[in-house]
Length: 134
Image 1: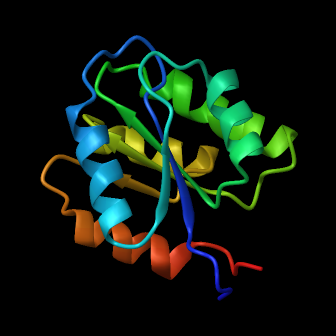
Image 2: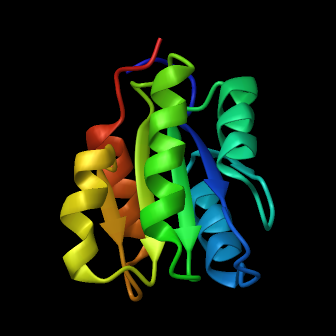
Image 3: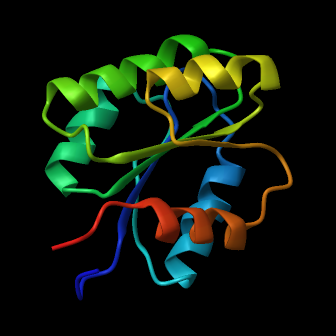
């Protein structure tokens, strides 16, 4: 692993206006030593991928509570691949039914974190699964 910190983008795609969990995660990951970029509320998949490209991130974390995860998350994954960012680790969190997890994994999501997941667990997953850094 390189000398630079792992860079994580936390995004809130869709119309979901609840961002407390995303902000807590962003701060917690920062405290764990990651470099964190938070995009704010109501991002389109295109906006998320543009930010990922511009910020040269290693991880995209998508926080969704609205129920639109089966539309928004696969779109973000597809756009990342189209833009040459297929090696970026994608994780999702929020209210996502267990029955939807296999389809999200097939779309390119490495992990789905539900309510109650600790910041330490998320950080450990990222450290164990992010691509080797320059």
